[in-house]
Amino acid sequence: MNNAKTYKKIFAWAKKESGYTWEEIADGIGISKKKLMEQIEDETTMNVNLLRKFADFLKRPMIIFYINEVPETCLPEEYYTLGPIERIKYREEFPRRQEIELFARQMHEWYEKIAEECDWETQIDCSVDFDDLPEENREVMLKLSEKILTYLDKI
Image 1 (cartoon, helix red, strand yellow):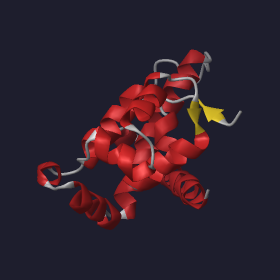
Image 2 (cartoon, rainbow, N blue to C red):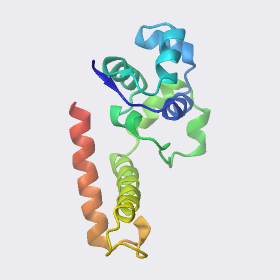
Image 3 (tube, one colour):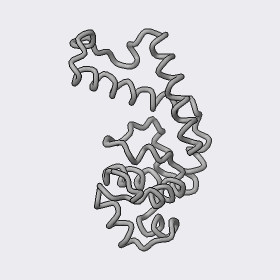
């Protein structure tokens, strides 16, 4: 089977961010609302082809649906007053640098948490916020994030 572990809270976030209703999303990807909701509720069996359609329809990278935490957003309040089509256009024009920085911040947060979970002694009690990283470290995270996002855009 070609299934992937996904999280319904991420689908709820993506729907909210898009401005679409569940019916509009289901129509847009070519399935019934009932079938879509069944797939979303079952966090263990989302078909990858359906996930790709969902991500493509909402103009979101597929990787976002594998993440267990709702992404932070730095979109301005006026974004939420736009309709679905305008939101997609806005995001398409949203500077790539901001998208890369958001992803780098998330990766740094995961790195800090995993290092601590793995008892990496050099990291214990010395975690720092992304903004407090030395410039060179921040640039490495940004460049790595850009490479990862560019790769994911291609698949």
